[in-house]
Amino acid sequence: MATATTIGWHKDVDAALREGREQNRPILLDFSAAPA
Amino acid sequence: MYTNPRVASFITSHFVPVRIHIKEQPAMWHRFGIRWTPTVMVLDPDGKEQRRIEGFLPADELEAQLELALAFAAVGRKDWAEAEREFHDVVDRFPNTEAAPEALYWAGVSRYSASHNGAELKELGRQFRERYTNTSWAKRASVWT
Image (cartoon, rainbow over all chains, first blue to last red):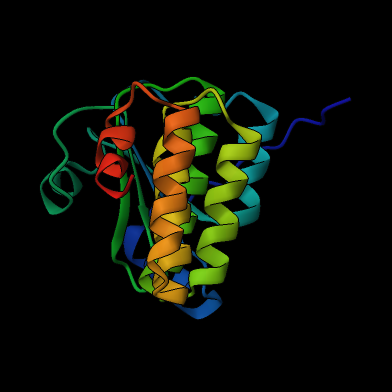
């Protein structure tokens, strides 16, 4: 049975870019206009 | 787009995820040249854009596109073996998505880039005579048949 995974979204792009560089991980940016 | 548990798990495992609501951070619209929502961008760890997905995609298509982005990041590093493996993984796991023929094409290109053996491109052209024959990727590969 699949277990629900909650995505731990960041809000700060520059902090995420720093984290990506430090951890050698790609960054996914989701641009939305829908109500949060 | 992220209610599918497999997609959510894939994102959590592979990416630093950032959600930008355009009304909360309008400057980001201009910074990244966003034209429409939803838009998903994948950047490599150095911040270079690898993939841009504009508009909604169902779960399989989205996951295939995200894996394609990881493969292109490997191309950027000239890690041809990893790129080929990732591209083949897209074809194997998501054979009926729009990403699959693109992945098949780039798997062949990655193999050729590692070997510089023209026979690899001929083989790629042959594969497109059997699969994904009516796609733009088959047209691109037709030059090698």
